[in-house]
Image (cartoon, rainbow, N blue to C red):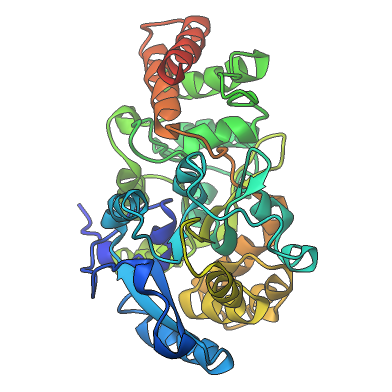
Amino acid sequence: MIKINWKKFGIFTLCGLLLSWMVSCSSGPSSSSSNQQAGGTQQVEFWTMQLQPKFTDYFNQLIATFEQQNQNIKVRWVDVPWSDMERKILTAVSAKTAPDVVNLNPGFASQLAQRNAWLELDTKVPQEVRQQYLPNIWSANTLNGKTFGLPWYLTARVLIYNNDLLKQAGVTKPPATYTELAQVAKQVKDKTGKYAFFATLVPEDSAEVLESFVQMGVKLVDDQGNAAFNTPAGKAAFQYWVDLYKNELLPREALTQGHRHAIELYQQGETALLASGPEFLDTIAKNAPTIAKASASAPQITGQTGKKNVAVMDLVIPKATDQPEAALKFAQFVTNNENQLSFAKAANVLPSTLKALEDNHFKSAGDQASAVDQARIVSASQMKDADVLVPAMKNVKDLQRAIYDNLQAAMLGEKSVDQAIADAAQTWNQARA
């Protein structure tokens, strides 16, 4: 068994697509009620998720530059461990002691947006500023027609593949679609006895399979939030995964093991494909250098929609802030083209503004580029088709559980596909009633 150095995965984990590690918060949150200081100076409290100590120098310099340009505003930066953020911000919002600017993802931020917790930005952010961001990414911060957050940094999966293993199976190029994936899975199994890939059906783990439904053209919920996947397209998606499992083209442990197992199998040379972040190529190089030498990256697999997954980090402003103008000024400063580009380079992530994404850093890697640099170019090239595939909604994990539990039942022959998808829809509708 290969020992994985989980602490080295880097910033990609912060978007919830992979794994998180715990770092103690340097200082606790404080009430925003004291934001107006003597002499008319305003204090903006800014919370981020687990960016210390790696980016301490970056943010100290960023804040110093902002304060130099805005002499009447001081910024207090508090970095909160990933595992603590939801609890801390829920407590702070309820107690009306929330910070002025908060780093969250759209999924969780939207839950509080339903409670009217965030400052609505549609009338406060000029159209010329809004147009600086990728349209699909801006839309990810909208709920019921109201915008609750400014897009910040992005991460997007790529398809990491073992070229040697694919060649052994007679596969000349990595699959680009789910249809091609099924064909490659059979070819790899027939020729090598190994699996092409691993995808988890553990409800609490990765949403990759749920996202595949959207990529295959399935609408998960309707405008009222009711199940909308009990359709011919939904049944086809259910049948796709059931067939892979029943035809032994998906490892049996897909029902019990999470995304970590996908990484372990790939590093052991037991699978040919891994859907993950570009940063994992560095991890593979450290843990499995032989596999790393055979590895390259391609765009992530998609369905007939052509949609690609992207994970988004936002900045939101609590509605109860007593410094809304200063908070918005700072949030726009952090997310402007120049600062998005500098942070994306520092953290090896992607910016959410159009101009920053046009920088040559995301266009060309050079002849001597590392595998991670090459993967970054692949990842950035997907942004024109990128979207937050699972819409922002309350209790989205309940939706994932309803689908995964019933998909597992169909895979094990306990239910027909028709019964499984009908039961999944009924479970979700009852849960949200």
